[in-house]
Every structure is written in C-alpha cells, then in structure tokens.
Image (cartoon, rainbow, N blue to C red; front, side, top):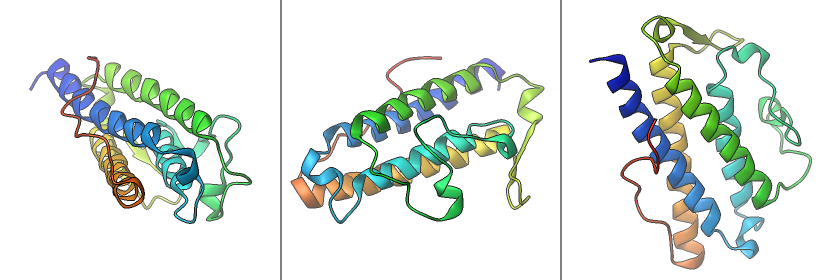
Length: 164
C-alpha cells in the first residue's frame, strides 16, 4: 500500500470518529451537559486523550488553556468546561490529527510513541488506531447517554466530512 493511500484511509476513518464525537457533543442539551452522568466530563476526557495520543513526544505534552493535566492526576478538572470550550478543543484536535496524518511518511511511520512510564510503546500507525478506537468508544458512550436521556442520538458517520 502506498503512503498516500494509507493516509487517505486513516484520515477518512479517524476523521469520521472525531465527527461522530462532535455530533454527540453538539446534540447534547444544556440540561444534560452537567447532570449526574457528567456528559461534559466524558467528552472532555476523550478529547484530552485524543490530544495526548496525537502528541509525537508525549512526555512533553501540555494541553492548551484553559485545560489542565488533571486527567493524569486521576482527579476531576477544577471546573465544568462549557460545550463551546469542549467543541473548540475538539476542533483543535481534529486539525492536529489531520495534520499529523497528512505529514506521515515512510520514515515517520517507523517513529515510536512511548509514554513516560514506558507502559505504552507503539509505532505511529498503531497509536493512531488505538486513539481512534478510544474516540469511538467514548462517542458510543455519549450516544448511549443521549438515547437514555433524550431518546435521540446522531447518525453513524461513514467517513470524514473532508479529505486529507
């Protein structure tokens, strides 16, 4: 398989997962955003790790403001993030993901993504697939919450709304 074909396939499916997450967040009514189910937190957690796993050197990862590193400390963030903030963070990560995939080369695919504790050590393609599965897992959880709370959920997205 040629690198350009791989990049196109990766983006088509990873972008679709991000689009599904965005659709779930966008559909969430304000009265559900911060109820006992913590919809906002589930969305934020997913996006935080989307960003982290997209960082080529995760040891030096820092999320953009106003977000902090509470996810690494196993504690809730200092406040509830608004839907606008969470969607802006997702947009930032979508661009980061698309750029990372667009810049893939035969050489960069061999690069390894290793976290600080060395418990995760993946080549670039594998961390992308791991990350995409994590996004899809949380998009599905959010869709389930929406079905349970408002009897509605976004439709399946077959491929990214744009190309690489």
